[in-house]
Length: 396
Ligand SMILES: *Cc1c(COP(=O)(O)O)cnc(C)c1O
Image (cartoon, rainbow, N blue to C red; front, side, top):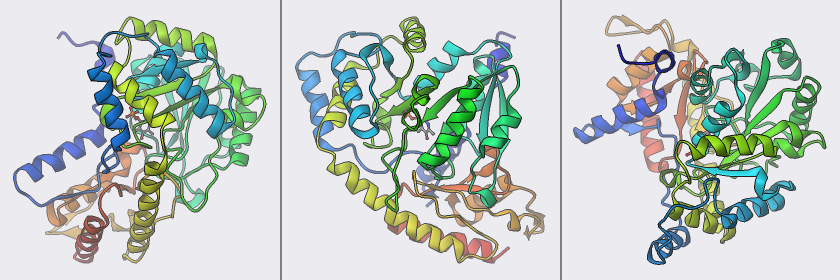
């Protein structure tokens, strides 16, 4: 056996797996509607693509600074100042190959074997497995739709042990779409600062918020927040740039320089061409972001409305990201073709087989009895998908 214990302790990303299954069926000609995707369906805006073409033609195609060029760091610093009222310097920023890579470098930089990281569930699928890869122990705090999938500071206090090193906060959240207000974040920051726990704030969905929600970066909510917070963000979700692989981290310079060391010994700089594209995304016109945001908001309204009209389904209306996370626990125990539906994975299987719609079971995110639907697909397909879901549920 050649495999490491480390790799045997983790599993492949279930969301990517569901999407692959749906795509494979589509390729066989099966008309599957996928609510599984974790990326915007929009194309990358033209000004961003043009910046990349220009970079190629100008020969900006060589190695560059490991942690990102001064130009992109400046664009990020300006963004953090303008959008979040945060002041960072060049040595407090590192650009990586997507926010996922930012998180990976961070986890490798901060965790020793046995360190604990508090992860509220439902969580983004990669947090626990990345923590395990880095030798850390995920400590899960469960939440449900009754409390809007939010943790309260008292629960954090209870979960803290002498080994707790960090907590991850993801607002707006994947998979629930739920957001924390500035005031709620303040309370979380207080508990973490008192206990010297690092807050890892994954703010990748910052730009996708609805109902005039005011987004606050966790690092900005209290004067003591910044020293205790690592901000993770990127261009994938806001600018429909998932394939370009640019994410970034802002935080205390010791941590950033440790991450840079890891990156220098693994991937080196993120793609030079993508860096130029991301500079344009951050510095250029922002109207395409707003256009996409408005479209997402319309789809959210529609899908939440349809879901709540279905027997046995209830769905809170989240004000961020492009996911909904309906409670389908009332469908468990029902039967079809003489087979009992035992859990949310059976529900997802049933929906893929019978209704030809792909959804991700809640248990992938550490929350049983729910399913995640991404509405990063056209309103027409959402409508057709909801019709299929409704009739599939009706025949249980
Ligand atoms: C999509 C996503 C990321 C990673 O995005 P990248 O494409 O790697 O920049 C990180 N966190 C959450 C919660 C996400 O949904």
